[in-house]
Amino acid sequence: MQKVLWGCLLTVILYLSLSGCTDPASIPEVPQHYTYVPTVDQLQGATSRTRSGKRQVVLTWQFDTTNSNIRAWDIWRTITDTTESSYRIEGSVLKPARGYPAFADSSDDLQFLDVTGPDSLDVYYRIIPNGNLRSYVGKRSETLHILLYKNN
Amino acid sequence: MRTIILALLFTTILVPAMGQFVQDTTAGQTSGAPYWSDRRVVATALSAVIPGAGQSYLGHQTKGAAFTIGFFGAALTAVLAENNVISRNERLNELDLQYAESRNFLDSDNYWSQMVQTKSIVDDEAKRRDTFIKVAAIVWVANIVDMFLFTDEKPLRTFGSAGSSQTTFALTPAPLNGFNASLTVHF
Image 1 (cartoon, rainbow over the protein chains, first blue to last red):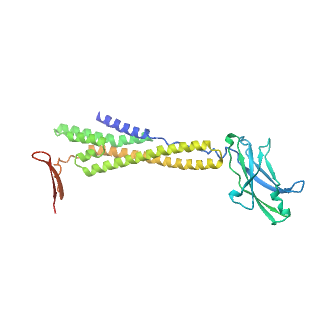
Image 2 (cartoon, one colour):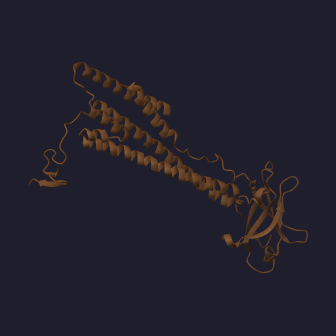
Image 3 (cartoon, rainbow over the protein chains, first blue to last red):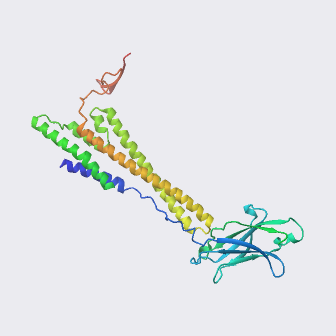
């Protein structure tokens, strides 16, 4: 009888000790924010001239078209200065009905090479996606460096 | 896993100890020498509540202190770890809420890295807590087994005039009222 009582006591003590403890809270196995808004993939840039002869930079990129949480992309640009605060928003591109988006930058900042100034110009672009849900600002793209020459 | 540990503890330590105790008791009863005296019953009850107290009660102060310190040290560590688990869980829930409500990638990434870090801490604390609970349980079981098998009764000693120590302190009832205290130091 005593054997049983002691065994029961030990079992109860251990059971209460272990089962009465708090379970660690869990977190999602895969973070949601990486794919909440589709990321900017394969960002590319090319230089060309408009019909009126202005120099322009054409940016193209792709995104996961199966993810519908995308409303637009903001294009940020800086010239020569690469500090974070020097980036300025250059424009915005809405999600196209089909296919991938593109953005043509022919602003005056890119034209002064034709008048005076250095032989080349370093231009940096970043693209930031904006989602529909919660107006979520997604992960910005890698920085694209475009080198503009006076003669092209 | 817990069931296996419980079963192992029960079958490998406690049951043999109980069996030995029953045999000794039976042998004592048949030979007319009661093995299970009142002092041992009280000591066992004390050890069940406060590990080591029974050993100290029977005169094994050092062993009793070791069991007491071992048990309460492990139990205290487990309690502190459990407290850390609770507080880190609260922090984790708070971060989870902020993560769900954040409106840009940078904030989300910041919250996520904090969540991962906090989760790692809370898991470590839970492991530590479980380990020390088991340590405390093992110490408790060892304390009970020790009471049954390895702790003999030392004769009662008058409080304050104990042993061969160089320095003694004694309290004796005064003839009229109160107590007389005497400190004896041998050089």
